[in-house]
Length: 340
Image 1 (tube, rainbow, N blue to C red):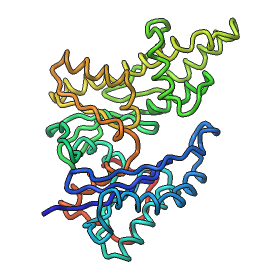
Image 2 (image 1 turned 90 degrees about the vertical axis):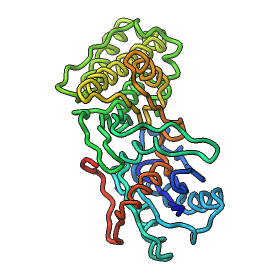
Image 3 (image 1 turned 180 degrees about the vertical axis):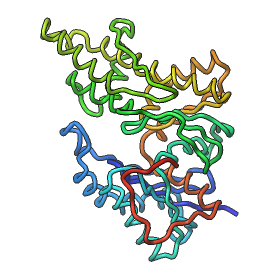
Image 4 (image 1 turned 120 degrees about the vertical axis):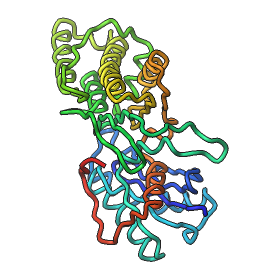
């Protein structure tokens, strides 16, 4: 029997709705918020207000694109957390209201789990490659950097995590001190293609086991620029591409070094990446290159599944539906979610 899931995602600054039939994506609509660009980061109050404006037309469009009505939905999957509490509240409240009005079951989803399970989405015109269980997933975004051992859709263990900043934060904050626009990660990625990654050397942190740290790199980068600019006020402008290439090379090396260690330790060779930073071209090439050297099967998400999107929430919700893990109407959003 086919199962149709409506997914709702509102954890940060993208309002998204998607429709999934089993694991086949029928629609995925995203409304991005440009209001934050001039502030150099997401403003929570502005984000929640924009979600309120966007959520009804986004869901309406997703249903129309999928060619179904509300009455065809078997369950509503929604992001409960982690994320911005005000933003989450919009999605959770709408999901509960629709559930109550139409007597449709609710399924809560961990946003990070959704990113990981995006690797199991198929498209109407083709089947995408899926990892086998168990696999390792490098989950990298603006707020999270983790290595997750995935034993099943419902059993995931974080085996490595950042002890301070995430990789995405390092990209964005370093971009800001160079005077680059927000979000900084994609800008650095673009400029890095024009630069020399060996031009500047930046220190790598020494952290135990499979954990990460990016705070020291961010701080040392700031001091490096301060000292160079003191000698030459035009230093950043004259060396932007090389700075971006060297910084990106360092961050990617930090990420892949720990992933290689985890792969050896757990003897797992199905390796996936997920999250916003998984769109970084340098990281994608590095993962593929390591895969060729080490005999990995590598899984890179399609670009439309790297950002926050409801397709991944619907996919995670589908598995929870199969396990009869339904939510009640008293469920509340959570800004932080421990584990999976």
